Length: 191
View (spheres, rainbow, N blue to C red):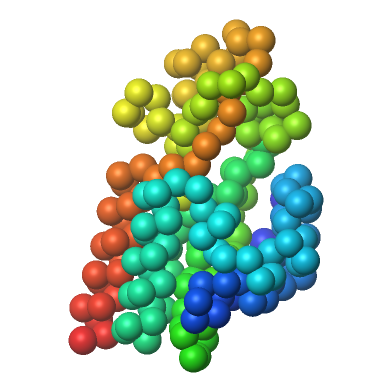
């Protein structure tokens, strides 16, 4: 939804990494993005890592949680959460909330409209093969070269296929290095 950049999408995890709260904006955002299965009853009480499938992203979240807890600090990282017809540039603040609890607060920095990309539409029928998209920047893994969604659609001739591949989330090297360097910079500033 273009123009709703004043919202805060927040959730928190307890010391055991179970989600203990989500706010109304987070729940509305999930519905707007066709993730209707993510309601308060399904999310609260579940382990954070049950929603993070790929190993690289799971490892990065583990590092972030450990860093925030051990250093009693806050880390802010950029990420994307695109819709089929919209690029969303966002920031995610990860902060210690006391007693080992950690809060995650996402905000939309800016949005850009674009012609709809069926690859990102959850309602489109899917084939059995899988395409990996970075969970942070939304670039697509094109045989080891990460590229924008629109470029990947053209280069992989996805528009010519009867059915698009399933999407799995991964983590590109650029995003991994960016998040790790932000933790290092924050630790250096806090010392």
